[in-house]
Image (tube, rainbow, N blue to C red; front, top):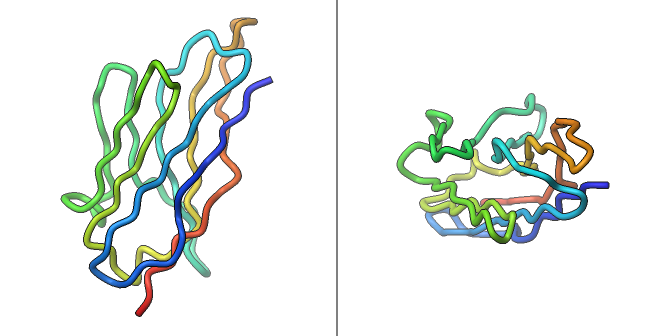
Length: 120
């Protein structure tokens, strides 16, 4: 059994900063890609940022230069630092992880989602 538990999120004013974290636990052999998606009101879920095990990052154009993804492999945790937040960043943020279990099966897992609201 593998779980992803998110923390962080909340309400922040435009121009402010917020950090998210997502910790993986359970029967994990290895973690490949980790990252974050988001789904805003009335919008489709979109990729925000991803980080491969080798260190390659991928960001949505809308967050480049403002968001930073990082991971701590020892803690099996991925982070998203969000700066210069805009109202259009308002969304539920979901972490994901491409995990190989101890049984050697490879699956994408998802966190429960955390609300980020950018408003004055």
